Image (cartoon, rainbow, N blue to C red; front, side):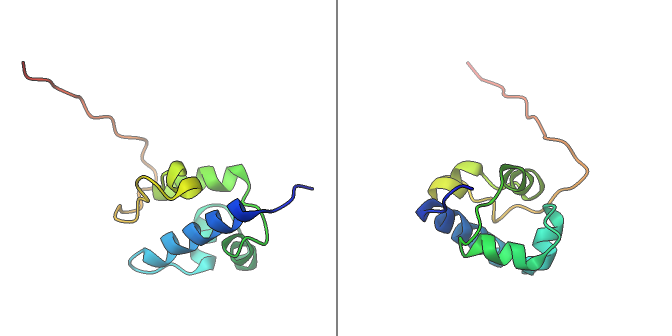
Length: 100
């Protein structure tokens, strides 16, 4: 069994911060269901750092809610809070043009 540490608390706090910043605000239950966590109590444990968030849940958060993994781990970068949830759509690629 892996030991929990300060990083688990930091990630949990960022998950909670992200979840509560959504408009409309998401409950732990609704947020958890969207990322494959079926028990709201488990989301609570993740948010307070009591349980380590598994990689597949982190990946689901990044995919479903467009949360930046770097932000979850470090607090730097784009939290994705101002983006709307998009489901059923793959990543969008933008063509880059340069004028010379």
